Amino acid sequence: MIHLALRPESHIPEDLSRLDHAARAAGLTGAEIDAARQGRSFDVKAGGAISLALALASKDSARIVRARLQAGALGLRAADIRAVERETRHVLLDTERP
Image (cartoon, rainbow, N blue to C red; front, side):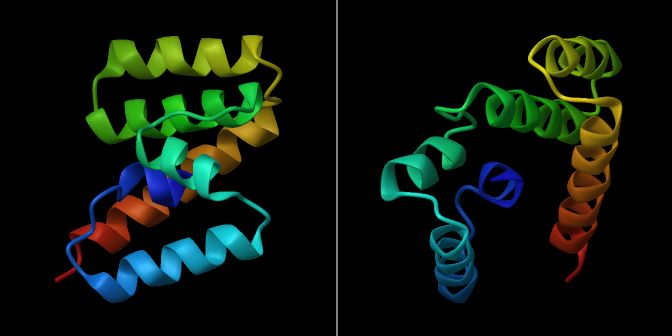
C-alpha cells in the first residue's frame, strides 16, 4: 500500500501494472488499490501507515511527529512504525533514481 500511496500516478505503464499485480497478489481489491493511490485505506492500521509514509515523503517534521503519534494511537507498534519508515525510504530512494 505504501508503494501505491507514494507513487499514485507513475508515468511508466509497466510500473502501474507491476504495482497493481503485486497489490492484487497481496489480496487487495480494486477499491483498496484505488484508496491507497488516494492516500487512504479502509483498514485503520493501514491508513495510519499510509499517513506516516506520506508525512515522511513531505519531509515536514511536525507532520511526521503527528503521523507517528497517530500511527501508535491506531495500534501500530514501534516495530511496525520502523518498518513503515524503512519501506518509505526504500520507495523514495527508488523513485529518485533515473
